[in-house]
Picture 1: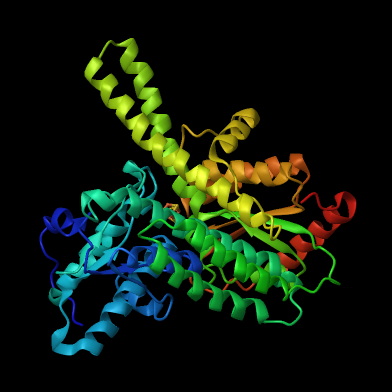
Picture 2: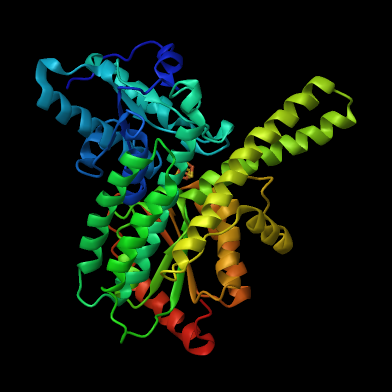
Length: 450
Ligand code: SF4
């Protein structure tokens, strides 16, 4: 592929947005293997050809079209989409039609650079005339990732529910892996089991997602849990518990974070990482929260039209948020009767804890408010150590770091920062080992409360 002068700026309006995905190939970045595949399975049940992109196969492709100053997830996702399209064009030859593809690149409102990835990637794709027809499907946190417009009206609520459930069950599958792997009877069994299980559950989503038959999907998850429990060696004592927070892409993708979870496990930890549903819940919660703030202001200023608009927003975002939280609570409750995976955080509870500490605020926004409150939650739950993982120079990541260090010192909980870039961090193993020594000291003094 040879780059040429990019198309005009109108492409930023016409080539990015929400597009009807029926019968299209919807390309999903692999932010987390399990979550992305189950999410794709849910979408396939609605006749969308959802495909998960391979990741980190050729980062040089991304390096060629970035300056080195972009965030690491931007480089990785740029590489991944270029890698896919190059392979697809080679595979299909003359039959390759860019209009058949929608590349899914969500965005987030706020000061951080995530809001610009899709625009940047639009410019990169436009520099190849043969790729200008590839659309960028951009879901936004401004409407709580509503998915409106991706399908015909009548199925959109079912579609949204299935998509959220795909993310939720993907998170649960990760938690099952983290619960089993440190205690596996033979090295490597858990990874093979999880890969197999992920495919079984993705098929279940494809069969049951569009009908929202979630109990059937949970039946399959229960079956795989029973199989997974046979991998656990009951003779191995429970290990110290380490909680991980941080930038969502990097903390969720093993390839990007230098396999942080496995490194911690190798040094004797059981690990729990903040979930992806937590972010989805947060966006709905935050939009509802913003609408409530606006409502108070508009009532004071006697603006009836805006008041009605605010009430509608509170209802719409509230409906999503409470539904999501209900499904989360119900699913964890059912599955935790089979295996003691860690429960997920509740966003409203995180906000309360943050307010109590008075070190940061949901009013400031960004992932920092979830990461800092997540650390406080882990400390309160008796975790033996906590880790913050983020791309090198990430703004919310460095804000979290500056607040979390003294805070965790006060809680007397070992804390580790793990910034990541594309290079191998040569000191990573050493810092993890030192951190894990402190974690063991904490474990000896306090034991495990979970
Ligand atoms: S959260 Fe960090 S890595 Fe993600 S876009 Fe913002 S600054 Fe970049």
